[in-house]
Image (cartoon, rainbow over all chains, first blue to last red; front, side):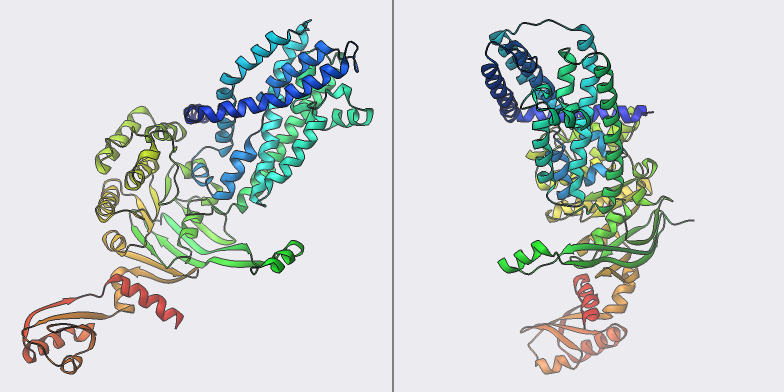
Length: 267
Length: 327
């Protein structure tokens, strides 16, 4: 059970982080712009390559739709903890947060959500603009759209928790960023970024189904677009729930042992 | 009455990477890292009673800040025990964190780009303060620290002194029973230092809070703490009254004479160690026990126009403590 004081603390942190981020509007706009560049590149490449036919069941319209949804999902599941939490562990700026009677986890969460919310202001017009220009044909799968919500929430949680785990490597090493880069490269390939998972060669597809990367980005998109159905859908959601629990467990374990090593450097 | 702060054989070792400068050493460290253990806090034991103000003294790197970080729960010790208000600090229980504060002169909890009031509101929610209690605390702190104009300006636009005051206020909104103050006056001008000192005294008097503070400014310690704990290289050297420290390490008085006419330096040296001397003003350091007798003799034998007898400055006393340890 989460106490009401914890929730009050969290919501006040969220408000403060939002107010703080509004001070950096230009910076946020540039980050937002940078975030849509990659999906646009993939979108252009795949919709050109596929021509009038299809690849693994994806037509030109399907690729366009996939990457339009991808833009939203990849933003909403973004993990920024290696850039926020890790430096504060190294520099000792974590200290004031450790001294408050509220787990620093909540502050990291507030920062994560605030960052996404502020960026949405810039991203939504870009998405709408692109959708209007590209006008892909849509055949809505209502069950998929309904299940997209829980899948999306789990994806964001897994991503945040794993991002936090990598950030917590900063308790042991000053190079947590390098480990994160490796993780991100794997996600690029297996998470449904360079291509939808269905387009990958067989052995990579098999790996993607069991590894966590797909469940941080690609899977919610596939759910929304009705690309996974029946047993595959249920199984996928179960694996995703499993990874959410596993990521939370890893987070707790790393936090417990990491915080003992915290050096609280600086004055 | 049980102690608010109880420390038993507390030890904290740090592992630090150690290598010489230069490319060769750098390459060698790729293959094999050498680590060195630094004993930041080395077996210290002391108690602080409720309502007491204790000054923590020591040169840079003595382990003062590490000790405060251990006692506020930021660090886990290598060994030993400590309790603060009955809690083990590094377990960081909610009930514990709600009753203490650690204020560091160089580390800030305030949001840089927002007015300090925004941080206050976060603390209000996080510490679960009722509206009335919050308003009362803010009013008290605004009054004591003269914060009126300060709280609504973005923190980045505040002067160092203003920021320190806002930082103190943010750390005290929840009315902590135990305060750890690490260099609360560092970098501040003399007036501002005085204000912060007055504030700490008044806060202690009105709330009965227990305070453990470190400072480089002897004036802070002299004004605030009757009792001092001196540490160096992580070890406890002295724990007792400030006056006792002076008696033990610098049992002198400095007699300063203003003379009617110049006298031979050798004549003055007969009374004690000459600390400074010019034409008509001479300072002589003498044993505390003999100060009265020496003063009487000087008055009888020298052409004295004016005379003062003073305790040695605290800086000198502290210097003696560490000097003696090294020699």
